[in-house]
Length: 508
Image (cartoon, rainbow, N blue to C red; front, side, top):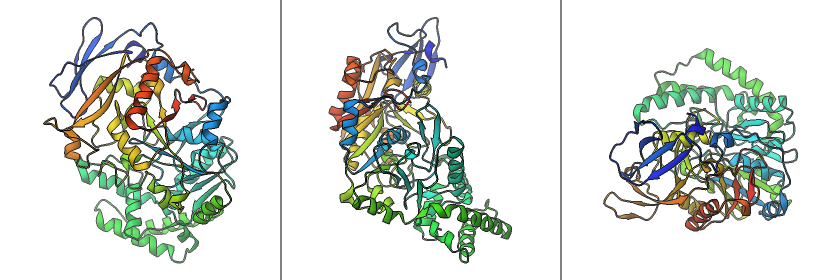
């Protein structure tokens, strides 16, 4: 789709009954009937082939090259310096909100940047000062800054081949990793066979598949929870390592007929991990001790969350969730620091909503409307390249995430992606099929799949905001959108993303 030729969205509240998107082409604008969510609430979306005269094409905004780092300015510096000694950046939706960029920006002002959960399923895309793009998966996004120590905590599951591949890629691009990365000796190892099991598990679920990244995260956490997992510290004891690995592989073979296991596989894996153990040793540390020593020495610590609260194994749309705790509680269990040490938490939320994989999505826009957001926002997974499902900002889910995490502020990202829309919708409340209000985010997926979403329609600003760096310079309609979100969730928005580059951030 050429976004520059389909950039004007006009929303009509006329209800329609069809579930699938139905295209009705004619000479002039094209009309598409698009269901919004699974609610029975329908709207007609029209795509005009011409951009508004007041706006630049959205794809021109997306393709804008990142600029070099500019001065933070007094407001930006004040915001960052006022953050508490231990601060965190966590996701407010179903992941992919742009957490890595904020971590990268903040990292310069912190001594330690730490990952506390997840694994290589957390893909963070960031840019260095020259505009070069980096896609990180295990290594904290603070690595592009020269000073911070990067810590991979005990709550992370570590795939060593992927870890070394990331290091090699960073080093080949001039980013020094020596002496700057520590891996917890308590972290669990994720093996290639965990990825095979992930594939077999998804195939077994057939139409009820979870939609995982197939990076082996769930099977590795399963090994951890049933207590036959292998930790980083086990690599120091190669006399017992083969027996532990044999137990894991035998367990997988007994569970899945498609998993082929024999003596040769065990022998090859043991030899491989002997080499990995030697290379990994300089990175291994008791990171619980390291983190608590840093706290006692008054060093500033920034925690980088992977995934997001709506994927939390306890609080997300279970079972369509990740296998760890990407909400605030995961900071303490994944790093071994006390709750009272944790201060400011920044929630990162897109100006609209996306999710990857299966599961309910109340404000999803199906058909061409979702396609427009997807291509305008370049919504394709960093880890898998999969297209993300797109929809309007879900205030009910966002408010729920703010309650769970106690965010002190929010980072609203990708506001520029909405720049060409004449109208923007906010999903402000849920209701039952019979019209009865739903007071909180439902745990019951049957309820969630059938909710009726009530939308507020706000005016768009229809101009390119990607070069704006002061909040006061944003169009009035953009102010109205930002401030309405603040009003509805009760948390201030201190950071606003208007582009992919490091400097494409407004401090409010």
